[in-house]
View 1 (tube, one colour):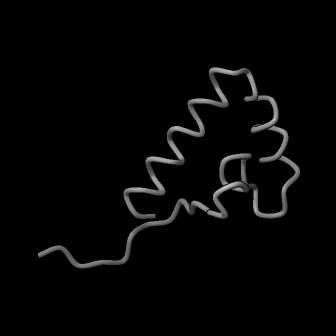
View 2 (view 1 turned 135 degrees about the horizontal axis):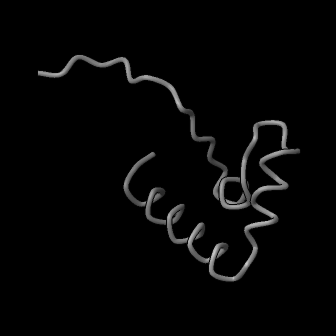
Length: 57
């Protein structure tokens, strides 16, 4: 995810949390096939929690 998508993702998540749409976020994460929240579905992103495979240096 590049910086612009990260910014949109963060802002979208904050808007959902402030406007009390967090229940929709949780429900979508539970029932969606790829476990995406509302913001991920809108942006078309999938965030993976996996170790990075790169070599620092």
